[in-house]
Image (cartoon, one colour):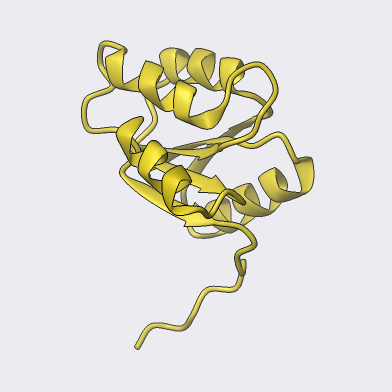
Length: 114
């Protein structure tokens, strides 16, 4: 079962993402800020990290840069999930080491398989 770490300071969004991923069979750990995300990743290596950009303590891109230098984090996928949708923001996210970038708002409803 893939392990997912969610770092999102908005509890409603964090709980929604966690619920959907758990419903689909993922092991989920959810935290409320970037520093907690780094601690959680050190404690238990995730397969995927979903990072909000604007969080207290440490922003998502900074967390991503730290994750990319941590031993044992090779192969961990990082998704930035943010309301920052400008071209410069997207470029900064990828420069920080994100594998993908998704903007809010998003629909929690998944499409049926084709």
